[in-house]
Image (cartoon, rainbow, N blue to C red):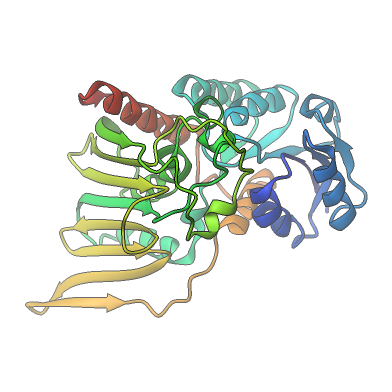
Length: 352
């Protein structure tokens, strides 16, 4: 069996925490190249996990290796689209961490390059691969929830600002704050469960109130590298409203820092036959049965996520599965996020 040869680009926290453990599980995948601008990171990963891998500090040099089948991009946000386009033009399939890009124009470049080269392009949507998410997708698909006409979603933290002063809080490199960092996760899950209706308009507000706070109560604040007296020109809270072409709507809320009770990520959907709650991966259903209102709490242990998403990418390359994610969904996502930022700046609703 031919192994899929992978080049990892960006050996930071998410790569070491989620991507490398996934690739270590499978015998039909081989990580053959490691690239990071900080060479010691790549060398450490080589020593600890992939002793046969080549090490690079320039991704363009890695892309010259014609034996590499695909690259996995875990760099700061602004490089996702740049590297993805270059990789596909170099004949590589692409898996990238979210967000897809930092602007709709860059997301469109990725989509167009995938179409022109015929290469597979997939961006991390790990919450679709949580077992409770898959169950709900099937439940809704079978019509058991009825018409999904409204919902709300979010990821809210008390204090969980990642890499303060570094690329996470520098708009030119991140594209924004918690809206683009966390919003991709829950907005995507909500829209996917709703059947991928087309967004037609958005409105939103953003705030930055805790840039000077060093308090943290979230493990997620450990992501990124903090830079003392660095840049902080992004929001720490975003709220908004999305309307879709089928008449449905979605409320959204994302924060790195807010005076709330506790951190949580959630999707709540309202259907004519059932309501759905997905909180931190745990699932509940709210229905009307025999003229009584019923609540159903799932005993299903939460499992799946990043590794299952990467496995799906590998299976797509092996023609074993049909892509669950297509680039147009990435373009739509970045258009939504960009329009919310536009709405926050202008004070008006933005038509898509």
